[in-house]
Length: 333
Image (cartoon, rainbow, N blue to C red; front, side, top):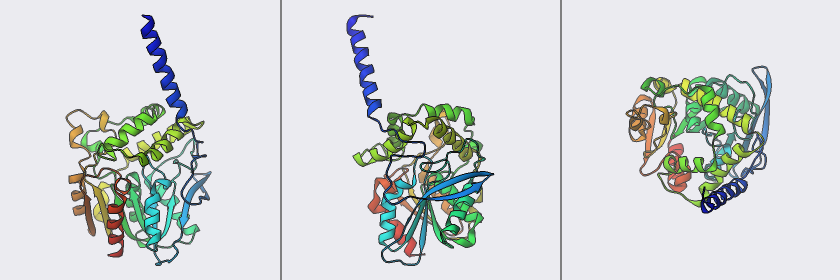
């Protein structure tokens, strides 16, 4: 290799190393990353093992008597609800925002039979422990699938569901997306970097737009992947991806008894495992402009609000528009 190429390769390697060194590194339970409100821990036993769920319980200055429970998505944490927590508490709502087991500041088990039923039961036990008997349950992304399962399991304690760009509006397996399996998901998660996270979020969450404030959430995920708990974080992530793929909720939408507010960014194109699907199938997956309408028709008491030119995370992309629609939908119940 000529000297100038060796020099260029060395400079590139040094630059890459410097970039990696500049990325944050957090503990396996997101130690070192600050949340916008005090974090408490709910300790409980599940499947014979002691666990803890981190959560924020934020009370308003002027309570209106209602509680909203916020369920985060797969690549999100309770902290990413920061803007929604502020908007809701200012409007008088008590807000409870947990990190589910396997995520963020909560326990990362070595072995756990993940199911939406189990996560819903964990959440229900947390709410009972802190005195919340009835609540509006709001889920984003994977949290939307969990919110649906929660509403089906606990209809009498769920006064309303709010689903913000939920995934699971279609059954990827039935449509032909191949199963990757836990081991493949694990290898994929081990290979995650800040650059890969940023590129995916830009194309899927924010319609190929980028703002400096999005970097906080890239750093949050990248820091977990860069930290000393990298392997256990990736392992739980793999188990969770398999849960999402194998446990569809779309067939049970007609069984929901409570009012449902669907808040949909129509430019979203999220579909689990889409990149592994046959080339001809990929463009047909994750069409939220159609999926939102289909879901609203399937749910007996649904109200659909669409956000044109927004992607998978409208609550972050355009907080003002999103929270105006959210508060209107909650007040109109």
